[in-house]
Length: 274
Image (tube, rainbow, N blue to C red; front, side, top):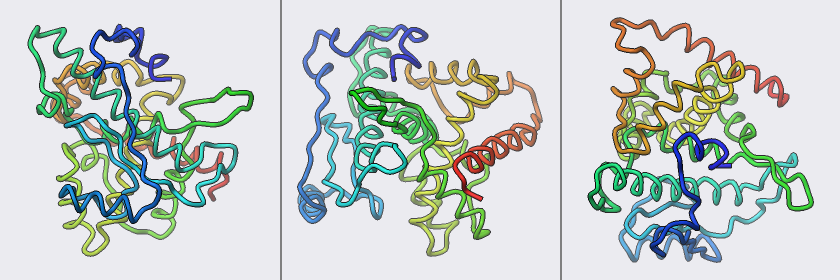
């Protein structure tokens, strides 16, 4: 799925083609239960957002997670556990390809933990991971990818129905990092930090899905231009604005905001969220 979307456009090699073993081996560390997972985080001094079931660690390129009980497949979609694995594996792939592409362009080695290897916008970082986590088991070993992520749609739908606070498009696009998300969620949420932090993932996913699929790809070319910047270490909120507006001053974001919300409303209706 990843190569189907980006491979030809960005001239990405298949992962098996990398010469170095650390660039072609995707690694997962799975704990048997949440207690063991949390004990390990305490032992290594890792601080995670509340409720996080998994994470990708850039320093050693490992995915770390635990078995999620009761995560059976629903509505023919991937189980929550598989959704988490696909999400974190996307982080892993993006990190690997970003490092390789920057090194190819500059001719210099890029450290795994370098700022440029980490990406420039948080909506892309988490939105693209959720984008590739949407999957459906078609049977006989066949899968459909890039489908709407039901639990993320439901999350935003419940927020709207309950008239609770959410992220504006401006706030979404300006977010640079995970720590910034946690800090801004705490300020914005007034005790509702966990919900707002999670909602950001739902809105970021919907924005990426909108950019890629809306009206048979109306905005896909702009999106792919920005993906190119993300995978070559040149992305930032300002860079996205430049790609989107072409440098137009006082650009009016309201029409595209309405298109995005209308697109999400259509997905809610399609999945019976009314």
